[in-house]
Image 1 (cartoon, protein in one colour):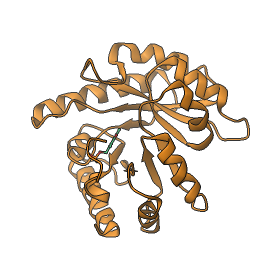
Image 2 (tube, helix red, strand yellow):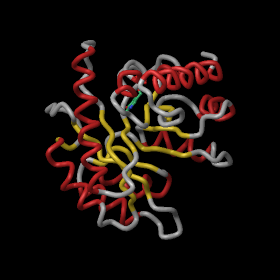
Image 3 (cartoon, rainbow, N blue to C red):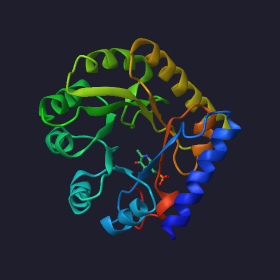
Image 4 (cartoon, helix red, strand yellow):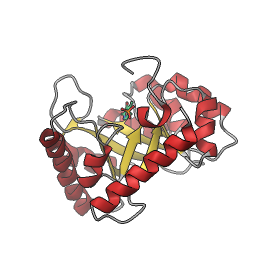
Length: 230
Ligand SMILES: *Cc1c(COP(=O)(O)O)cnc(C)c1O
């Protein structure tokens, strides 16, 4: 994979999707999802101009964050969070997009160092109400947002969604539009909400047409992951 060229391709597709949706250029951010890839691969992306990276597994991420510490990168935690991981997440990440319960938010808040900037967070929403999926059901998002907004070391930035995998365009659109609706509702109640994190390699155009402000792209940028199903 020629990472520099792939990064250009992805940024071009984002730009075209913005134009097609009559949205302003630069209104959609690219998060490079770098799980399973070594620090050297991320370094290539960074050299080509990418500075936001998303990681799902804490131990793996800490190694890369340390190895790339001389670069000014922005690290987003996007994987499931167990309570015993919050201290390291609070210490080493700039964003956490996968908040799905108050307890985790409280721990991150309590463990975020006073010397550090506030931790940016998104609530992960289970937009299709899938039984096995992490995330808060849509009807519980506002009350969790209210609680998070009381936590002074966290800054609530928006929501993150991973809809059910499907090849049906109308089903994809429907999930993304429901997420956008919820996002707009949140924006009315909470100042500072500016992030609707949705869209991955295979559905980013549809997500952008539905109002995504951040797409999370792994495969499209780095190639097929060698470890499947992660
Ligand atoms: C792996 C992952 C992605 C990236 O998926 P691709 O299909 O490789 O682009 C995006 N978001 C989350 C939460 C992920 O775990």
